[in-house]
Image (cartoon, rainbow, N blue to C red; front, side, top):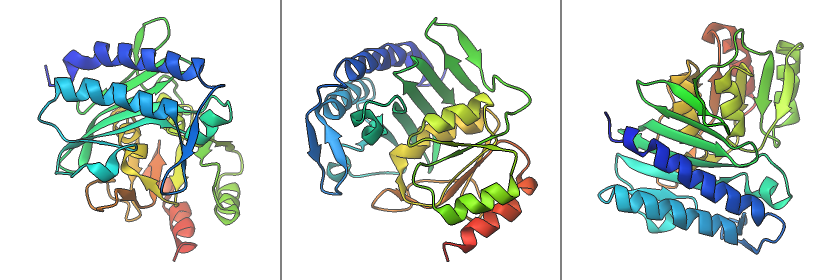
Amino acid sequence: MNRFDQHIQNLLALCSRIGVIQLENQSKLKIETKSDKSPVTNIDLLSNDMIIEYLSSHFPEDIIISEESAEKTKRKQSYWVVDPIDGTKDYIKGGSQFCICIAYIENNYPVFGIIYIPSTKEFFYAIQGNGSYLVGEDGVKVKLPLKMPISDRIFLSTTIRKSILKILENDFPDSEKVFMSSAVKFSKVAEGNGHFSIRLGPTYEWDTAAGQCILEESGCLFLDKNLNRFSYGKEENLLNGPFFVINGNLNDYKKTIGQCLSLTE
């Protein structure tokens, strides 16, 4: 048993409790603006405190970096990254495309990841080398991917540039384009409900690490602009570069990726 196995049930219970709090308070939020001009709510902060309290008590020697406390934490090669509400803007608007993301990065790569979606009560998790799993509202655990063959969908950020979208429309005219603002889209691709996702704009390590672990353990690729496995711990500001998620054969996407990257040069 690795160091994460024994905590799966406790983390599922914790995320479930936090999810209830998030849903119950969604219509009565106190909203502030952070130094980077992004919004943060009182429920972001409460959720963050609950996650940090658990991780700190059970992994007292570990470094924990959260979206809500990144400026206060010094990073090492191995550390936790936490996003208590990924998709805060959607959450504030009363939407359902937000989630809790927790991941552990070891020697620059995610080895444990959790995505919990409060609106559907779905708990996705993966441990490196052990596969990816979904625990549904009924408590039944199933291994990912769920769907074969892979659905003809591409998952995209709501802020994707029109020029990039045009390339995707030309190269994959039959693929349904689905727009999501959070790591929920990673869970969908890991399930087998999509074959491609792209993000060229800035994201942070806590936005992607959990999703990457879940995707890779379900058989997907999570690549950087050089088509190498995406890695972490390179930038002091925790910013990610462009990334590409592929649920299929890399050769089928190289042309599209090259065209998209050419627009960023």
